[in-house]
Image (cartoon, rainbow, N blue to C red; front, side, top):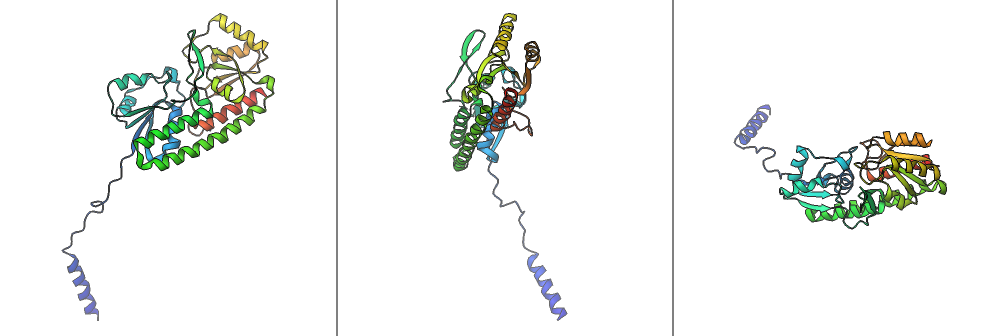
Length: 304
């Protein structure tokens, strides 16, 4: 009996000795490459992440905390732009540095995510210009989300159902966010719903939620502008006359001027709003909806 078992084992071994075992990965289907997407601003990066998820290879150019008005891309940014399949840009003067790179040639499709957004007017160097800070109104964010979904659908039609589903889900989240933000603003007494900001970045937010922008420390939609002594004195008079309760500065802008004006006016200074940027991961303001709620809480607490 034992001898028969030994013979069977030996025969089996001999029978298999002439077979060639293929490498485990020889016949494996290679994983499809992901769509390479570049987003110029931190807000578009955040919205693209909501829509594209892990189905895209996403590279954001302007990081959280950076001032987009003074941003300049570095060599690695330019390399990412040149290698992209799809570029999602903000437009409205906020990423004009992209134009020089595109003129050198790229295979990527370029989509301006803010197309179709109703623009408000701002001021720069005494001239009326389009205000680029559109992401502070959830209605505008929904337009941007839908534009991103359409761009991804066209570039990667195999995943169209997933992109469209994710866009619809985030649109619904933005609707919920709008309701939550409005509830916070409604807690402010009507006579206190007045904003003075670092620079003119919250016009869309004020218009969407029933606030009034009284003025800005830096008189313009860009942080590159400078206030004259006369403009600062006039703003100080306005703050006192309108009984403004607080001045709001931003995390991406040096708050020194705003703090000095707040001290002169005898009002509170809130120096950690997000005007031009989003927050770092874990801040609660790293998403567009999170940023809107973060700012609303800060404004409501300061003006109540």
